[in-house]
Amino acid sequence: FHSPMYFFLSNLSLVDICFTSTIVPKMLVNIQTQSKVITYAGCITQMYFFILFVGLDNFILTVMAYDRFVAICHPLQYTVIMNPQLCGLLVLVSWIISVLNSLLQCLMVLRLSFCTALEIPHFFCELNQVVQLTCSETFLNDMVMYFSAVLLAGGPLAGILCSYSKIVSTIRAIPSAQGKHKAFSTCVSHLSVVSLFYGTSLGVYPSSAGTHHSQSSATASVMYTVVIPMLNPLIYSLRN
Image 1 (cartoon, rainbow, N blue to C red):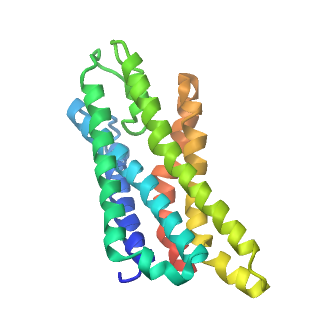
Image 2: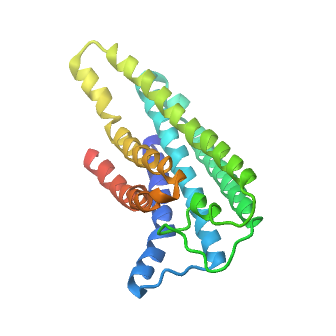
C-alpha cells in the first residue's frame, strides 16, 4: 500500500465489508427464520454502525476524489502532497468525524420514548424511519439529522464535484487525445463508484420523507446497502 490510491482503496474495502456486515447477516437470519424481530438494543447498535460506515464511505470517496485531483492537476508534486502522513491523517479525521456523528445521532434517539410492538417499514433500523415511530417530540432530532445530512453528506459531495470540475478543466487543456484518454481513465473507476453511491442515496432519502413511500424506499435502499458495496471491488478489479 505504498501508493496513496491503494491505501485509500484498502480503507474503502474495509468500510464496505463492515458496512454490509452491519445489515446483511441480520437480514439473512430474518429470511431464514421468517422472523423480523429485533431488540431495542440491537436496533440502536445496528443504527450506530450503519451511520458510522455510511459516513466513512462519504469521506473516503471524497478523499479519493482529492487524490485523483492532485494526481491529474499537480502530477509533479503528487508524491510530495500525498505523503503517507497526510493520507493517514485524512483517513483518521474521517473516522473521528464519522464516529462522533454516529454517536450523536444514536444519543439523540435514546432520549426518545417509544410505544411497544413497533413495526419499522424497512429491512434494517434506518434512522429516519425509527424517529418517525416515536411518541416524543422529534423537532430537535429532525434538526440534528438534517443539519448532519447537509454538512456531512452535502459537504463531501460538494468536495467531489469541485475536484472533478478542476480535473475536467485540466484534462481539456491537455493537447493530445491520448493524454486526455490516459488522464480520464484514471478516474473512471472512482467516478463509477461515486455515481452509484450518491445516485441511489439521493434517490432513497428524499422519497423517504413520506411513509407511503416506505416500500419503494426500502427496495431502493438495497442498492446502496448491499449491491453497491459488492460491486465496488468488481469495478476497481476490472479497471486494474
